[in-house]
Image (cartoon, rainbow, N blue to C red; front, top):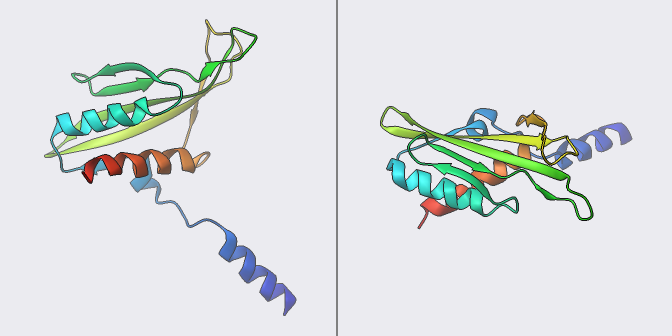
Length: 134
């Protein structure tokens, strides 16, 4: 009986499953310019700040983390978001990387999948969707 109680409590405490298809990319039935501007604004909200935004190529990229106090090393994440035409809709695909180098001039970016850090993807789209509700 105790084992059943323990099992039911632990299974309820786990976060809900992530729909990887829904959070690895998302389609929007909105004009390209509106989607691009929302992605740009969303990436600009991150503490790393903006590195690149190219509306023609549909790429918005953040800088890599921030400089570590007392050294020239850069640590942290980078997000690159690609906006592509998908029929009559726009596909938004975020791609997360983590810098594992301690040298500012030679970052070494390692991809982070939704399996490894689902919350990064979930929060990106939750906040992005707020731009389209206005």
